[in-house]
Image (cartoon, rainbow, N blue to C red):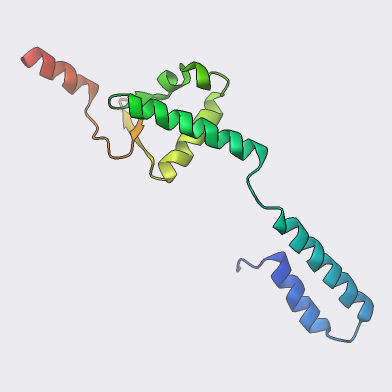
Length: 132
């Protein structure tokens, strides 16, 4: 199955009908006009705009942090206190997919950091301190 849009399907139907049925042709053209009008609104929704603001806050927190941070530590920030765990997970997932954030699972705990940050296991940091 191809990824045909409604507008493409209506174009095919309009071509197939041709001049045989004037009323059907008029209705198809009206539907095509409605689709064009609906698609021209564009722009991000109110929720998408709010999500972009939350993503900026998450990136700011991760840039200030040294190394990887647990999601619970991110949610401890008062600017993100209103977010649910599900919403925070979705926003972090979008940032990971956009290659702005890296995700690391260590001992069943998921941690996040700014892209390019090298992961150092928390146990390794303790071992290095004890060795000195």
